[in-house]
Amino acid sequence: MYKNIKNFLWKIYINHFELAIAISSVSIVLLAVIMDKFMYLQACPMCILTRYIFGLVALSATFGVFFKHKVFGNLLIIISSVFGALLTSRQIYIQNMPVEGLSSLSGCGMPLSTQIEYFGIVEALKKTISGGPSCAEDGWRFLLNFAEWGLLFFLIFILLSFSRIISVKFL
Image 1: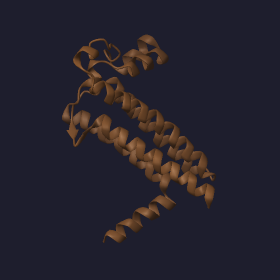
Image 2 (image 1 turned 120 degrees about the vertical axis):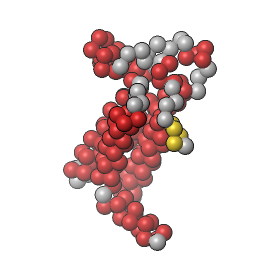
Image 3 (image 1 turned 135 degrees about the vertical axis):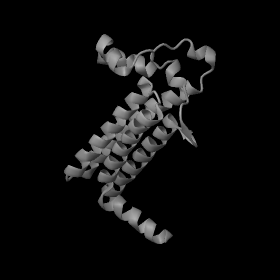
């Protein structure tokens, strides 16, 4: 049975990699939205921005499905996943800050859409990335919290895409 699962995953990796990345990214966003609605969790602006980056990964992977040159699609996945890994790393850093350090942060005081409306996209992104006390809340946890799961998925996407580029180059 283990061998069958391994062979199945290998076939997906070889034949449908970009499609699997797109479906998994969209599934992560849908799961986060569903959990917000049914578990009444309030996502901070940094969490919302992470969802947008997962959407960007899905869009990059979708581009990779339609291009013959697979290196381009995988590079797009890597670039967008690096942005996601950096953002989730920042959130994990904020979650582990002492209380004194959190009081100096003021970036996540308003919802992301409100920040964009008042400050414009660039300033809203700066404020969101700087973080705030609402970004430090751990919220829901299943072995890891949302930011840690996000970082794990972004790193997996980076490593798998990088290995695909290397295998295409040397085949």
